[in-house]
Image 1 (cartoon, rainbow, N blue to C red):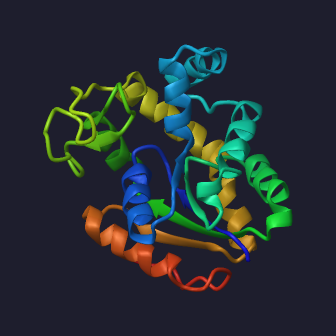
Image 2: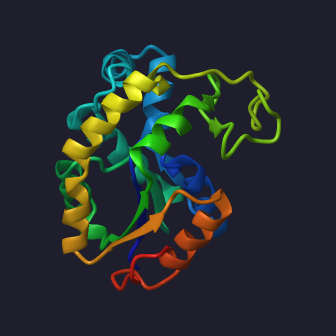
Length: 226
């Protein structure tokens, strides 16, 4: 039986993390966030974390070779046997090819959903974003503030602003995104598994659009959902 990989694709602050949690809960599949994995490594000051921190705080992508092995190991765990959601991976065509090759024997089926939001909206969103320094969960005061205000819903730890959410760093990350990650749209469109939704809407409306897409048969995506 094939596994289904749902890839949420979009620029920084597009809402991928929020939508990944909601879709994962609805479909009862694990959400694999490379951002969370890397931030945990940064908090634990591992060798990977130290190198990743240098790239993340500069607004650059973490090199492929530092990410690929982590993702492959995580996706081989038992909880991913029936499918999974990827948030933040792949970000380059190289990573997309690696994913397909690494799981070719498992007959992995891929559905990609792009969340489209204008750059100026993304910069404003990032300014309102807060994260939990303990568990890594991300909230946004303008769209997904959580239930406890300035504290994390999961562990009640006070939320903080991330260094990579400053306007200057976000603008740099967007430049990197458009230059290096945007070609993935063409790559997945060529494979017939890419569908785009308008991400500049209320969270629940975006979620409804995404669920409509991923519940359709893989490999036969609907027209762009708005």
